[in-house]
Amino acid sequence: MLSTFQSIFKIEELRKKIFYTLGLLVVYRIGGHIPTPGVDGSLVAQALSSDTIFGLLDLFAGGAFRNATIFALGIMPYISASIMLQLLGAVVPYLQKLQKEGEEGKRKITQYTRYLTVLIAALQAFGTAQFLSTLDIGGQRIVYMPYGEFIALTMLTFTCGTIFIMWLGEQITERGIGNGISLIIFIGIVARFPEAVIEEVQYLWFGTRSFFVEVVLVAALIAVIAAVILVTRAQRKVPVQYPRKIVGRRVFGGATTHLPLSVNSAGVIPIIFAQSIMFLPATVQQLFPNSELVTNIVSNWLAPGYFAYSLIYGLIIVFFAYFYTAIVYNPIDIADNMRKNGGFIPGIRPGKRTAEHIERILTRITLPGAIFFALIAILPWVMIRAMNINFFFGGTGLLIVVGVALDTLQQIESHLLMRHYDGFLKKGKIKGRSY
Image (cartoon, rainbow, N blue to C red; front, side, top):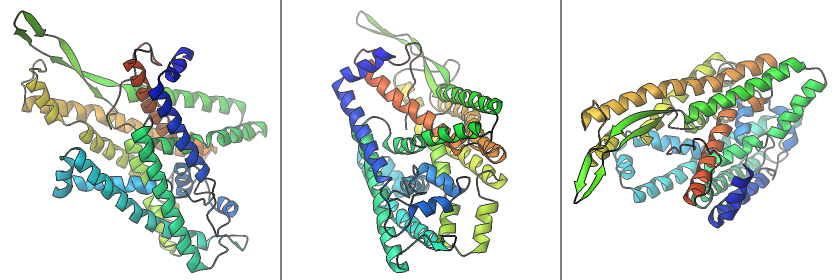
């Protein structure tokens, strides 16, 4: 392992990418501590409970929402915009055409995503400003500016903060290492780890939780991480046969290989997308802070840990697992490429039958992976409510941390292997996934 880290810094290109990525992540963390004008961040932290949807939003914002900083909205408006355009891409002919135009179409869709991000961020900023203006602690108002000025300034500040985070994520993806958007969410969750460990130690020190329970929780956490890694890297290997070709005096082909189909082809994307949608009730509550009906529905039905929230959240995870797998894998294109190269699956006719066979396998292996991740994301909330477990150990954050870490590690591994260096895993390299 030590020699592998030394190899990383021997490759100049990889070294620059890593330092560039770390530098932008430091900038993001610094921005997460710059307070928003006109609001007392310490009072906001007291007013918001960590076991509600607002606590979950704060987790994705890296603590910026709880402290009402300029990055309070985080990257979630950009993710929401991406979801909308991808869903519309399945039904709107113009967007379908752009998706097939290659790099040029991708640039246009990215530009539309940015415009939609600004709109969503502005709406969420308005709702958040409305929500903050209604909060008070012991009769002391959190906002100490005139209402109109605070609304306008907060909308401008939060929207610009989201745009800047979006730019940071794009720069990391283009010039750094790993997926920028995922890494921003990752670093925001990991930044809470020291605080979570301190709270766990306090629980143990003051007798709030017994030593036996603490050991069981740590063992369960390690077991869940191992299970997530196992399912994330699990593959179904479909055998593919290529016939021999004789060109002159040389013989080409004739080899038997396999088509690797991942159980979790979409990675952490379904978790992030599903969580982004589950933030919608909180956004509606912010827009209508004085509505008792909306407040009761969000607080008693659509808050983490409740049955309705868990059911909807789980179903959305399963849906996006299938949806994103359909984007990553196109069975028709795979079958056509195999036929053009003379490849075939033993016992399956090339062309349409091969595409149907691959699609059937993907449908079957995606379901258990999606259900597994949905259960991991939901079940810890029951333990949180029943046993007062620290929020960091929630399933959603754990899945994102493990998934993003594996993806980033895979990219570093690819750079090392291209330069003929040993990777992190000498037995069984990390299998990459397309996003």
